Length: 432
Image 1: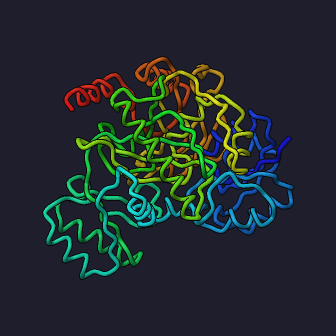
Image 2 (image 1 turned 45 degrees about the vertical axis):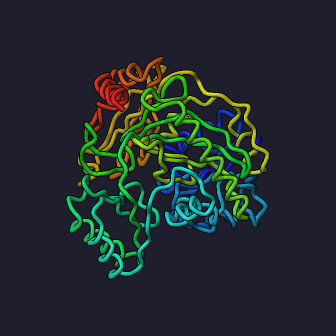
């Protein structure tokens, strides 16, 4: 039985933990919260600041860990990968250098430009205020204002969406510049976003089903950005409102990125996650990330069929296996969060009747502690409820039917995957 180290204690890591154990791995976890599901699955665990790579490495060496998987993006921006490797532990996640694909937006855009990878958009990095002011006051178009580093999905603000005009955009850009010493402006693009996650050994890539996530806190895609309120996938691995050729395009972009990083001497091994937008001019690259998406990975892992441990080994060893598949079901995920999430969260306690949950509904534990039947919320996302059914609308209804088994003061976006939402998306698709 392989000893596998999992770093992280959110919903994404709970889903990974279950696949590791299902595939016969012996789980060891390093996490900052007492996630009741991850702890129950683990042979040993370490409650630790997940950025404390020295303590995690010490824990791994002490327990004779053979392979490690790193979940959260901030941990990828530490020397943990390198320290584990130095101690002869395989890692199925990218090195710190390769993770720059996510931890540095300028690195990602420069990579696409250098290698002529399609789907790139105009972007510009600013490191001084005078250049920033001169540019924004001279331009008569809208931009997304982005910190260059990690933001947890909450740092990007878009003109015409979160920022009313160039004055507000300049003020926010200055705020980022004064804090980080740099700020990125990217042209604003509009359309339907979609996500493609791939497994890669630094050479080949193996795709997973397309997904779409919903970042805005409130129904009808209103309110502040969050880490993600939910996500959907369809039974054929595509999305009904995204052209099949756009899936092919996205997959070719992901393959080109992996090949380009290998050619640059900075190979990427792990899960690469591309976020794209279907625009009037075809699909464009919004961002590329260096780990499983959250929430979209929970849909994907719920549908995954195969030996997950062997897949992780094949990634780490540079011999990617593709002998896995995905259940031919649609899936809808809705995150249970504390009331006020996105502005002023008010965490409380949630009670769960696990025995009454439907067979086609899975519950993943995120930033919580307590027991599986009674969890204490934090100020972040609490429970991911995933329904699976032949159609997206039916999967959404399955989630709704099972909410009666989750009691307490919480908020959830009921509209994700609903009949009304999907009808609106299809109307827009037919018009385009």
